[in-house]
Length: 328
Ligand code: TRP
Ligand code: SF4
Image 1: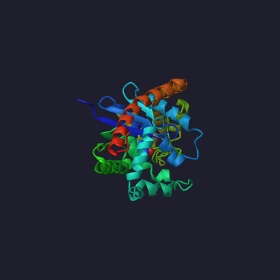
Image 2 (image 1 turned 90 degrees about the horizontal axis):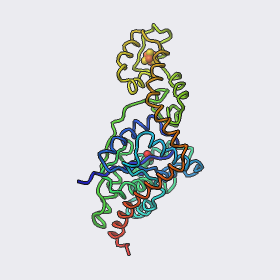
Image 3 (image 1 turned 90 degrees about the vertical axis):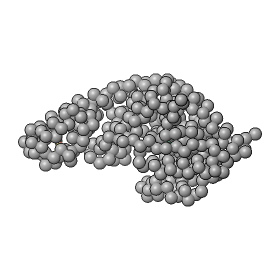
Image 4 (image 1 turned 180 degrees about the vertical axis):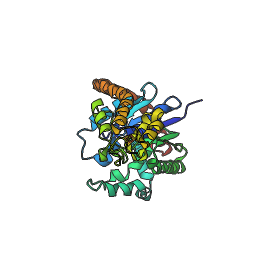
């Protein structure tokens, strides 16, 4: 029996950090063996909010490819490609733009949120409003069954289903309705205890050297009530403790009770975390660094994956054109 199809994408906005890893990539890596997977670099999506800063876009695409592979995505198992190399996404986007009622886009919760949040950018553009339509094209052009996404992306997936349904109703059945695969992400805060996010400057990224990782751990906020080692601590409000939960599961409980009893000092606790975190981080960092030393090889892999994706994209687009009676 044919495997079900999974598709997901990420914007090339800079370096992948641990929050992105546990929120998405870790899960994608697991899915590779069970499904026919498509993973892509969403560079056109990056333009919806970043159209004015394109100088680094291509570099970011390369480093995202390196991050993908260093984290365990395998171009032999999955089709890994770059959106802008597949013109067919743009044509399907255009066709969907014809059939998608404007209010569907205007009422999308992320639309108003982002307009309010990104006050320093002018994103009152046609492209930004239409981006869920582009996202629907990304998904439906591969007839994806499942889309692994975080909660925040659910409205977009709902919209993709509505767009598919409307197309099928108007022209005949071409598109299956994609379902979400909700990621039960491990919760890892940023180094300051808030949500890990590039805009808060509290990330640990795979581009950080081992020295940087160590110093980020040393600078983490701990329980402010602890001045001396013997002061009883409250590990549940401590970022170091939250990291131990993810990277040092075996000792997590013991560390919590030593902290509460004032038997372990914060510096000692951080040293332990440095060691455990680096055991996870360093191999990925080194693989990423090695991959980025051969940009031509990375480009060739992206080209190759994109050629494979294009075959499927062409096939679906031709079905859509035929259904709409615009095929020759
Ligand atoms: N919108 C997603 C993001 O900003 C990226 C994305 C684009 C995507 N197209 C997609 C994700 C299709 C899943 C499926 O992260
Ligand atoms: Fe945090 Fe560890 Fe210090 Fe306790 S001992 S406050 S868990 S760093």
